[in-house]
Length: 247
Ligand SMILES: CC(C)(COP(=O)(O)OP(=O)(O)OC[C@H]1O[C@@H](n2cnc3c(N)ncnc32)[C@H](O)[C@@H]1OP(=O)(O)O)[C@@H](O)C(=O)NCCC(=O)NCCS
Image 1: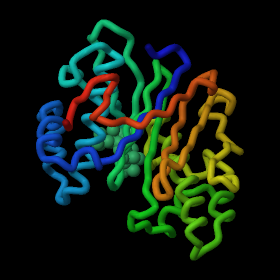
Image 2 (image 1 turned 90 degrees about the vertical axis):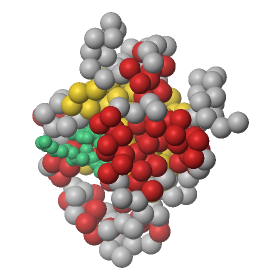
Image 3 (image 1 turned 180 degrees about the horizontal axis):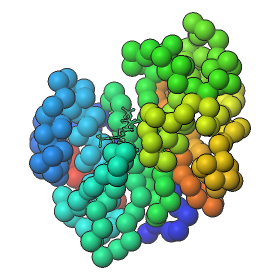
Image 4 (image 1 turned 120 degrees about the horizontal axis):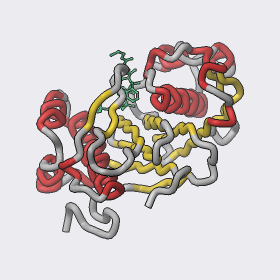
């Protein structure tokens, strides 16, 4: 049961999709549109991360809505942000999804706008291009040609900013100086400036976690209480007490 201010972040790895039967089983959950999108990825890496993300999305939402995963319908707002189509007889849950090389993450909340981003340091990063999307103050705090730790700081900035822009729904078109974070020694981000158009900073909460040496997840939610953030590793071999694949 998801309470009013709860925000839950699930993250998963494609390792559970190594077996062909597992992938076939999960493909059965996808809509025709999702299947076409899955098939359009050229490389297996992209296909698997997409399947992982969308099968996780349907399984988690199905659990919280008490509905079969494949029955859930989605719509998009004018900026392309997916939402649950209402009509299931319950208030819609808010959710957001992210997939990157080998991993996927999703955030859900009762109705608070939420955004999530997952990135892996092992991806062929174009550090200069990522840094050019940061606020002036964030970019100035990074050293050029950075060490591995600087790459981690860059990803900390990038993911928390993208989580925020996805919560708002504007994606990559967020004006870069509308929001500014500081990243501490532990590579976790703290808000230092927010443009008043997004409301008071105290209404926003940000969470970030390095889930391995290489992968970082960040979430953003417009909620009055930040104490209720849950992190869960999602595994299809043990989903809410049931085994969906494997074995
Ligand atoms: C959202 C966006 C930042 C995603 O970036 P990304 O790092 O490539 O991808 P991620 O894996 O983190 O996130 C992708 C997921 O975010 C969600 N998403 C798509 N558009 C979104 C938006 N505007 N806001 C929030 N979430 C969005 C989708 O679930 C998408 O996955 P899917 O396509 O498999 O369903 C980028 O696609 C974007 O800027 N979109 C906005 C487009 C836009 O501005 N359109 C304007 C007029 S059409």
